[in-house]
Length: 364
Image (cartoon, rainbow, N blue to C red):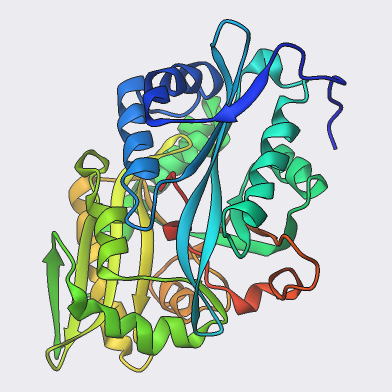
């Protein structure tokens, strides 16, 4: 675990409120300069994420110095979950930020420890988080989260020349980009089509018609999975229009047999189509092909460098991605779980019991 100073000094940790929006946005500008999001856009996202949640508002903690400036922030976002088919409330720790000049103080571990104690005091059965920063992962494991395994990011190139230029850099990257240019044409020609018997429909709002898809397939297939309902999907994908999500459903015989939600966004140095969630009835594989046809068409229209999707290797959705030219990239996220009592089953589970996607993450 990283070395920390022995005290918090003049810092105090308190509950955050909606009125902290501007101060948290200021902290974001200082603490996360590499994230391509303006201060105003982050403020809008913070408001939507923590105060617009249909389950209930998030539990927000902030670290303030003597003059009231915020130097730290973390939140527990309430998520309705299915565990063994039964509904329960889980917590999703997110937006952990510490100002650079406080990163050697006790503020980081104090924020995380106090947040995890909310599981006992605020009714969360457990907390779970997808982490892809090695330093953050190491620190949070030391603070009590248990890693269950790595979830790969699957990528489908659309502009191999751009990827080669960025990955190699300099003169080698420029030369590789020239050599890879013909592959751009090939990648542009490959793509699934909507199969016969499947109707693909873009939606701008979900109604309860979609809920049987999840209740009979996704929720029934995994021991631990975030609950999908019309209300949660509408909040997640349409609650903040500026994020630019698009969503499609695939119908077979008139009923909804699958859905996908995605948006165009920066991912590291690339312009990517980030697939936030993807699921279809495994008994209707043609629905999955139709959904990826929607992804493919949008990727071409947006002229992205690649499409990317976080998906467990054992998921039938990973098999779908592999069939349509997605490969497991070097990027991955580690699923971690915190349980407030040792006798609970969540920490003893394995990654195969879960189905985490970018639905369970605030960036994509």
